Length: 156
Ligand SMILES: [Zn+2]
Image (cartoon, rainbow, N blue to C red; front, side, top):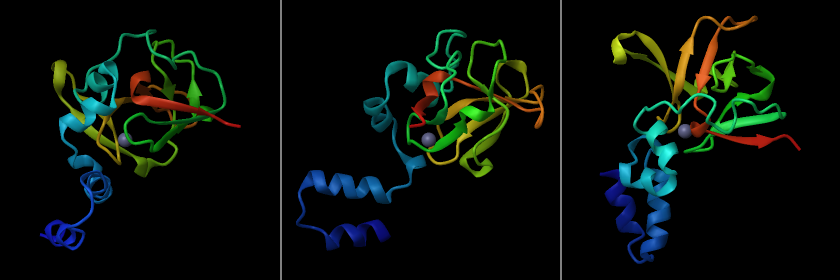
């Protein structure tokens, strides 16, 4: 209803401008699959929207040692700092801590006959990876994240 009222007040704007306004006011988690298919590559879509896991040692970032910030590939939310990245030997980028806990959501995952903790972007709901409790100090946690769900921005 609110959306309808809002749209009627901007009635004469062009379709493309209307699109960008709608983009801002509609919650990222309510995006339809067409929206994501257009914006993500095939691998990114498979991981972020279908919850698939990339092949280990195949992604861009498992062996990245640069200093900077890892953002959600789908919505650009900052998720992990290079300062908390560690060598897990798994072939996936691994972190012992999130930049801010509120930037992620943890969901119980009972697929594949296991109970695991799924890690999801707190802003757009994209699947990122899983959280395990066998990480290094100081947290003892291991965020096992798909490279395809991340975009790395080096620190200048
Ligand atoms: Zn996101």
